[in-house]
Length: 407
Image (cartoon, rainbow, N blue to C red; front, side, top):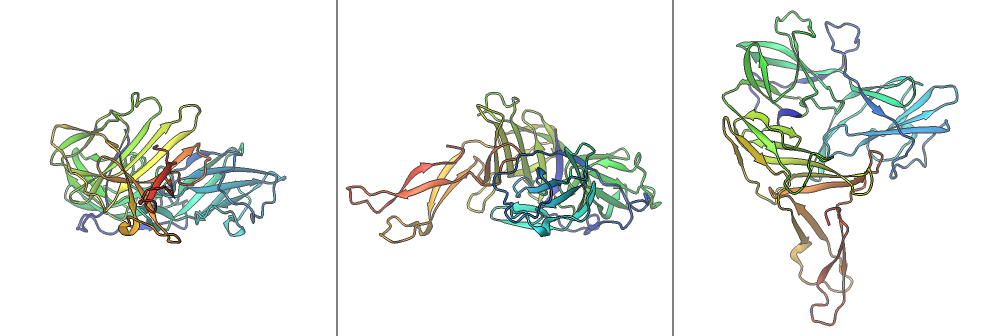
């Protein structure tokens, strides 16, 4: 069960000042810097179908690819390309601006097997996204079939534990550029000696943390700019259920972000397994769902997020109780016509917006079908056409066909 307690609008307090992202000049001094956590990624010879290589200055004959989300799941994936040269070295290209095009400027310096490049983490929400500066290390494995990717540096700030304010650092543990998932690390300099003990001062970042015999609710934003530890007053559980899927354990994956009234959010993943969370009221904010295809190994992947057009219900998590939540619920498909037109004259332009909502009012913002090497084209769209009939309503727009993966 993957858990993280994060906040999108946590007020700044004495416990939660602004944290700063830092990449030390030297990683050899372990008392001053913490080593990054690399995540191995398998390379493939299959090129993403929407990746443009028309102007790529490749020098080798063999290329291998891997794509990762460097940010939240709704962000466009970053493509890494290894161009293998005849002397055994390789050129690395990183589509850091996410324009799905490999150009001369995307080439990293050096022939490997190690590179360091700047890469912004992208937080996508509705029709916009935010970028935050990061630096990553990339290591090509000895066989040439893997890339190990890690976020360099850490977020540094201070927290109050047991009445004492001490320095703390946060390290990205899953190479997504963020610092509030269960794979990430929280280092606390408990004895204030300026050194970092990997056995006594390193913890996994979780929803509810036990430190020095006390239990705390960790409150942070996804990026890692804020963090406070508050004594836990009471806790319950949240359990995601997928009643519409007959066998949710067979290949289905689901994750949901719930946001409390104070802006704190909880990331819960997995179906049918309760996750302990602080008691309180929560709204659904983000839902990610991945389902296997019927005939082959390809998968459908869906992303939903909050939308200002819909009111979202609050769900109460009582102390000692388990709240069962269906992250999808009864889907609601609507078609909005711009300007609320009921008729369209010849030569006029008509804009039609198909919208698919979950039962809690989250709007779909991405839908993909295919393996990890699939392109980033959005398949959650509909085909709309005007039809001419003999009745007086011949100029009214009509929905002719739906090509969405939900159809």
